[in-house]
Amino acid sequence: MEFIYEYGIFLAQAVTLVAAVVILVSAVVAIGARQRADQNEGYIEVRKLNEKYQQYGEIIREVIEDPHTLKERKKAEKKLEKAKAKAAKKRKSVEDDPQEQRNRLFVLDFVGDIKASAVESLREEISSVLPRIEPGDEILVRVESPGGLVHGYGLAASQLQRIRAADVPLTIAVDKVAASGGYMMACVADRIVAAPFAVVGSIGVVAQLPNFHRLLKKNDIDFETLTAGQYKRTLTMFGENTDTGRTKFLEDLEETHELFKAFVSANRPTLDIAKVATGEVWYGQTALDEGLVDEILTSDALVQSRLEDWDVFEVCFRHKKNWQEKLGVAAEGAAERAFLKLWQRGSSPRSY
View 1 (cartoon, helix red, strand yellow):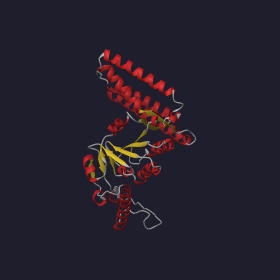
View 2 (view 1 turned 135 degrees about the vertical axis):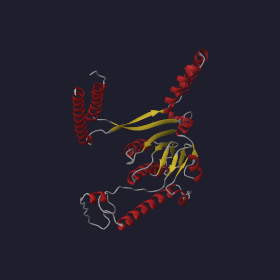
View 3 (view 1 turned 135 degrees about the horizontal axis):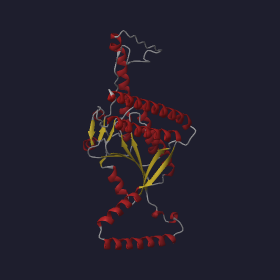
View 4 (view 1 turned 90 degrees about the vertical axis):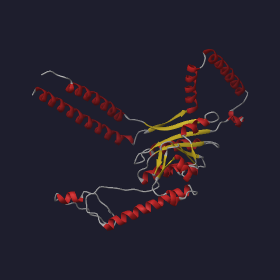
């Protein structure tokens, strides 16, 4: 009995704590959502990948090289840097010697969910980079997405079209998956590279929903849907679906599929669209054979190949958390720790 009593107390404490945290987090998020429109929502973070990989290389060499060889190499590199600095002083400015200007590669990332939520960051990144583009510069977008809502990925593809419209060479790299809406984005590029086992394609449209009409009818529950317009609602989750509604729904899917195929064909006119627009997916090598991608190559290999002669910059839009969101994160952490303590207390061994 004592165990049951203590367990009941523990359970009540846990439920109370969880409920309090949910209410607190919901409140601060709601307040933050109301105030976010008047605040700076984020910032652009830029990292030069040349320096990053140079530092990695230095760490490796310091471990594996003979100390004497390492010392001599560092001396030689210092002499070379001094010579470069001396030569730079003789020039009035970098513009006086255009050959000294290196081309730049800007690297962006898009990791998609069903709603293509990352498009908000993508649009900010593109808006920040495009005004700074100079002749010879290029943009690489690493896309990872299995697809999702048509309008979300349509907007994401439109953001990439801004790069093409500005006559900036655009490469899309697919390391894991760019299917359905993900491929809608990828096909905009001048060049698509994919890893050997990356999943590409799925040029098709799918829609599915459960229907609870028979369950409601069995329990004598009526559900009514009132519409103005013959096809305002074709299929429903709770009402009785009709053959007319199903036919119209399928017509809408086919129309969306035709738009998808037309979009891909316009961006990759050499594709046999009738062959590849079946909703199937292909792995990297087969996708290359079908013309869905242009080269088998990982994004890492592409970036590494540019480091010696190009300046490579990774550009990322970071959401700036306001104090309400920070408080919510802190509250969640505190609740998690408190719940863990309660659980440990409730599950510790006892003698009766």
